[in-house]
Image 1 (cartoon, rainbow over the protein chains, first blue to last red):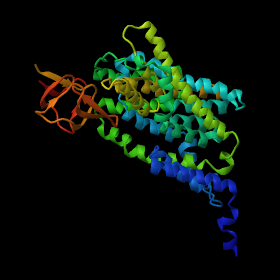
Image 2 (image 1 turned 135 degrees about the vertical axis):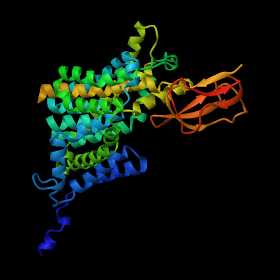
Image 3 (image 1 turned 180 degrees about the vertical axis):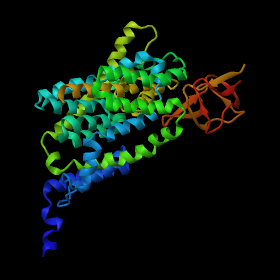
Image 4 (image 1 turned 60 degrees about the horizontal axis):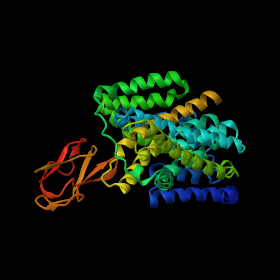
Length: 367
Length: 71
């Protein structure tokens, strides 16, 4: 009889069934539509198993997924390791060759700050508002990193929002880009950038770490790992390490990240009336960021001789490299011989750093 | 007069879109580059005959490398 009583079926609640179905939807989107499959697949599966009853998988001190979550995310290990891998994948050349485009990456963080105030105004606590705002940076690991520290109850929802919007960049951004630019502006061909010497590429991660960490010490965990990965890459003397952090290590931590994030989305934390607001505000943050990036580019054009194609401003939201690809596509639509891809990578990379700095600022204030 | 087709950005040569010896018109596709997992088409800068490719499929090219010559 004990076996019969212990059957999970009796403990299923409608909430679990519903949330579990969201997990199934994510799995479907990952496989069928290939929306960020490396993340949404494990996240979706994590959601599914976290909503099966009596498993104790997320029981503190006991469950398997709880351990993954606790040691990986609460202990702030996994997001910085992801950044280590991202750093090793990143070529800062496009950013260094046109340093003025860094401002566009900073401007696109406007969405983060605007949304922070809006979210607080509609009733979220300051910590929650900050976490929701950071979705606008379109950077998954940073969102998770911040959420785990100041608003863990929102982690699952915010992470899923951030990763979904990253996958939806090619749908969300173009209408805004079209609305804010004229045909003539989209046709602007940008002046060729200078070649960046290797020495500069090696010095950049070192100098950037020192400057950014001195300015915003709370961003150190993410920035230092990001820049270390980049130094591995640019030094060209530790190919083995570069290869490991780019591939094997990145893959390993991605698995644990995905399943742990999914596992936080139990019915009781996820099925709150404000979750729908989180998705809405996250989208809002993303759209504002796209707009502020473009508008700053247009503003800069008023004062400079060689014009910036304002489309590249949209790449200031950090979704790398999707946002840059969208810019390239829209530029090529207006003029098929216009190659904006590499110009867009500059603000794109500056956007990643900008989002990390924004997260660091929030951490300094709220932790 | 020969005109060089240069790489607009660095990337990998994905495919050659025209035949050597064939005549091409301005804005015809010459070859396809791949950068950041995205295909980028390189177009002919002028009318003429495609004299030769300086690269082959799979080559890694830098910005401004000569890809092909049109005469």
